[in-house]
Amino acid sequence: MDILTKEQARAYSPLTLAFLGDGYYELLVRQRITLEHNMSAKKLHLCAVKKVRASFQASACEKFAELLTREESEIFRRGRNAAGAVPRSSNPAEYRKATALEVLFGWLLLIGETTRAEQLFEIIYNCE
Image (cartoon, rainbow, N blue to C red; front, top):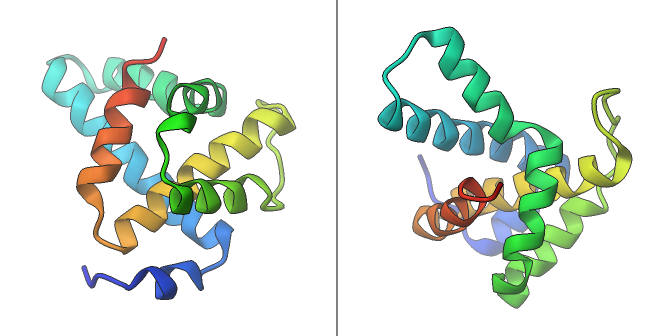
């Protein structure tokens, strides 16, 4: 994958970054669950759903918010303010925080900061 400059990545809309970040975050979750558990695909899926739902992501955001750099906080804020349709399974506040997390992960992936994304993922994954 081509690495973009921060300015190039910042030019993408928050919802485009969230689209990419959602897939990247879910891949990290699936990879971790697969490495930790050898079970049926159905059970793996149920484990993954717990970690990718908006309510989990929103509560995890509280755990790492103070660890973000100024620039990461700005990207996170842009994501939180992005307008998008809220699914019935979530409330607007949770969904905005989850979208912000996905925007951040998408931006980090585009700029090649996967090590940083993985550091944040460790914090998020271990939240209960």
